[in-house]
Image (cartoon, rainbow, N blue to C red; front, side, top):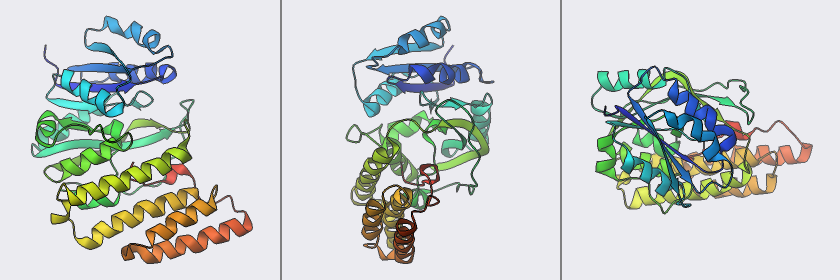
Length: 310
C-alpha cells in the first residue's frame, strides 16, 4: 500500500536518542506512513538501535557515507513515496496524534503547502523542561514573518510533495539552517498553517550550542542575503522588514551570549546597529550587556530563549 506520509529521518551518531524517535512514529494514530532512516555515516551503535524496528515493513534503513545533512535529507525525499513528506530529527520525538491533526489541516485547506505545530522542550535525558511563554505564530503567506524569525520547528513540519518539485530540495551549500533556506523559498509561493498544540518534543542541551549559534547566525545572514538578492523576496517584503530581519538575527545572538560572553555579545549588537530599523533595541542590548558584565549578572538569558533563524 502506498503511504500517505513519508517520514524522513537523517541520523548520525544518535543511537542514544533514535529509539525514542522511531517509537514515536510507530505509535502514530495515522498508520499509512513510511519511515526512511538515512544513517549518514554513524560510527556509534545506530544500526543496533534501529534493527529491532526493521521487522515493520513500513520502515527502511539506508546506510549512507557521510553525505551531510542536506544531501542525506534529499536522499530521503527522493526515496519517499507519500503525498506528504514529514521530517523528524533523530533526537526529537512526536506526540501520537501529530500526523493525524496535521493531515486534517491539509484536508480543510488544500492551498496550504506546509503544516507545522508547536513544540515542548526536553533536556538531553528526555526530561520535560518548564514551558516558556510563546506567541502564536502567523498563518497564511508568512514570508515577511519568516524573514524576521524562523518560527517553524523542523521536526514539526509536514510538506506537500509538490512543494519540492516547485522550489527544489535542501541546498547542499549550507551545513546549518538548511530548513530556513527552504522555508524562504517555499513561503514565496505557498501558505503555511499550523496546529496550535505542542506535538513535538524538542531535545536541547547536547552539543556545543554557543559555537553552533554563532555559526548558525553567520549562515542565516548569508541565507537571508541570498533570498533577498536571488530568490526575489525583496519584491514581496518591504525594505524596513528586510532590515528588521537582519538586525533581529544579530540581536538574538547578542542576547544569547550576553551572560557567558559579553564581549562577543557587544560585537553582535554593534553589528545590528548597521540596520536602523531596530537601532533602539540594539542600543538597549548594548547597555544591558555592559550592565550585566559589570555586575556579573547570571540572569541575562539562556539559549532556549533564542529566536534566531536556525
